[in-house]
Length: 190
View 1 (cartoon, helix red, strand yellow):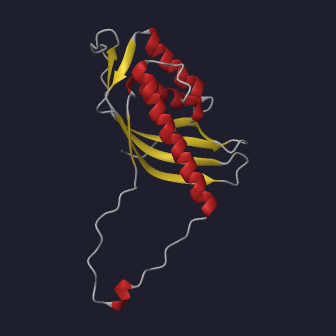
View 2: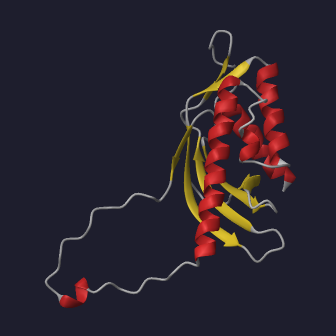
View 3: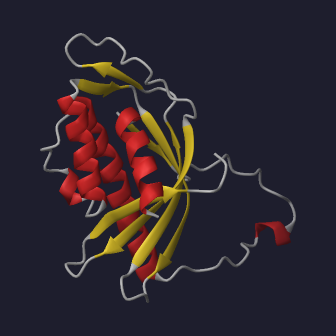
């Protein structure tokens, strides 16, 4: 588990810059009205417990904030960005800050924009540590690592597999705040 987190974090530290999170929030065009009375009757839809819906919404906001501020900090190679701690907790926070320090120490920054598509979420609010698990596909296609001084590409930093399946674990802490705790490799294709 730690190895997977390390691999994902290392790759992201070498490639993550921007944040263009796309989820399943858009609506397609509506169907034309039907002459059939049965077709106009809404079918019953499953209801979601409001506490679960709120947990998923808060956890997803934490995930998006983490992605956004990790990108901002990576673009500037600034491990002192205080906004990261608003969305991510240890052990992932320490690893993220380490990787951003490494960028800074090597005189590198990231250019481009990462996109993340949230594929699914799962909440476990009855666990000892309430958790929301977020499955996402990360696309690093538009990213590159450059030297901060002259924007020249860092040799051998090209991304070989720009699309990764990931699983983010977001915990609700005693303060009520949701924070991303870890990110692992996913198994689903992107």
